[in-house]
Length: 310
Length: 262
Image: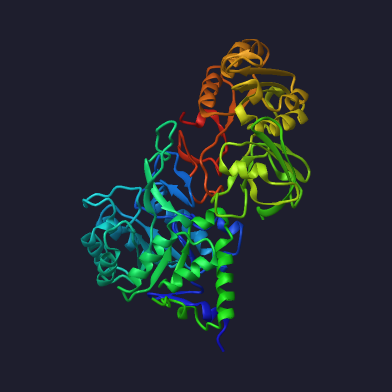
């Protein structure tokens, strides 16, 4: 007999998720706040706030601004660094009773290596998501604004990391490239286990009275329902170009949005901005997917993935 | 559970741009502290996308009032909401005012409250609490014009002395509230050293922090920043302090004025 649990189970790399709904990086901290609102044990997993080797103060305020159907942010990877993660955050993550995916970002390959080496020894970390696409930080050693705009950098970083860890590796890509398929293929060739897309779109908003940008960091990353169709296209394009599973994200507010992403090729979905509006959104989305499957007599969530009739 | 649906008890216009909305708390609201806030979804649609934060204006047993000024789409929608409707609310959030950091009681039982514009909102709840402690309160309200001075009567009932300043001179002193405060402070400080509490525009708060420092007064300020989640996950509402960035939603909204990098 197939239980509900089995129906919803998905696998990325060597990581089993109890359901395909996970919380996107930067939208749930390290899980402790979400715990006040719902049972995190019911989540497919959470992706932590991006961890960098050393503490980053983050960008000057204002850091968030609402635009039509979207949220523009310039947080700037504000985090307390890797050591703090190990000593202060890991014990809290263990209590969440869900799969934990650690999001990391490095300025150099060397920093990525140090982070992955360190995380490989931490049992609660089920997978590592490489944030190659934060629009609010500047990287050394590449002439591109984002690491994931540089095909060679993507290949180099992933190949190196593949050689040093058994943990499932996920690459989070930016949509702000000429051809996202090329970048995804480069990641796959280098040995990535799954591709997470998309990160926010670079954006800008200005105050017409003060002539000042709305964000302290001037430009920011746009998320929310406004970017959903753009994200769906990226997922569909990449789905047809690579064999590894896709983790889809970009403006998922409801279970219908989540199913739409799966139809376009996402094996797993990340809920991000919706968490800010409704901390229970990911739980409601999981319930919605269950009901949809029951109504449509779908046996496994995997059967929805990539069913777009196009 | 901090996430709940609340019934709107009333939603009334009290000034040209100001409204007071009261809602029913699902459990006793006795745990709500002055200075804490509620993050409210003004409708069920995706526009506006995010919740909006509102400070607790009046705190009753199972009824909370918020005072708001219509400044944009979200507050326009809120102003049109009718009695009996439901609001999706997260709260109470944040730390609130500390009556006295050392003893839990008010130092010298003397307080000065400074409100700029609709910064009066959380200060009514605070004045009520202070007056319950038997504190002697001097209130300073600053606004653009007479029409922008709200809650005057409420404060009158709770405080010993009320001073008003308007930028155009249509009510009280003509000029900035900080100038009026400086002028009156000499006399007040001759008798005691009150604790100062303030809420309003950042430029005003900066000025007040300076005044408090010069006169060695303990001063608490309630800050505002653009906010997304309100619960400490998005790290959006950062404010620069002497020990690095802090979050208005989680570490604030009330801060010790001397900790802020103005």
